[in-house]
Length: 193
Image (cartoon, rainbow, N blue to C red; front, side, top):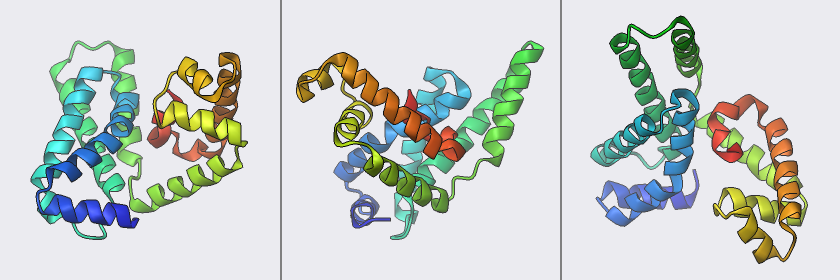
């Protein structure tokens, strides 16, 4: 955990709404897409993520200085998804056999998925190493696309290159990331949408 996270946790524990908003804005998209990978229902994911952040606010005083926000948020999201799948299976007995099997597979995958802080620390190291391995142009295009959420046309204008070149940069970066993160793809799906 870095000093930035520690500072946010201290402020959050003291009821600082602005630090909660920073955490919300910086983590919402990642955990939403993590949940969407398993549930394939945007409304359900949105409801679960709202519950996750409500729980964070309600339990903020229980956080410690060494709390790992990533691990906490992904664990609570995982548990929300598991509950949703259990409820869906019990409510919709008329599901056809294939849909039920898909839910079973997703339930099993989520149950066995580790969301410990060790995984997140390793993922962060892999992401940083992979980013550093990209060419400067490729890295800049990828970061603008995935972290700044810019459209390819906006990136092309900003970087003063052809949109096709931006597409090539992003495609190349994604291939490299998929290979580097192959063991963590369910947690990192937000990078590849």
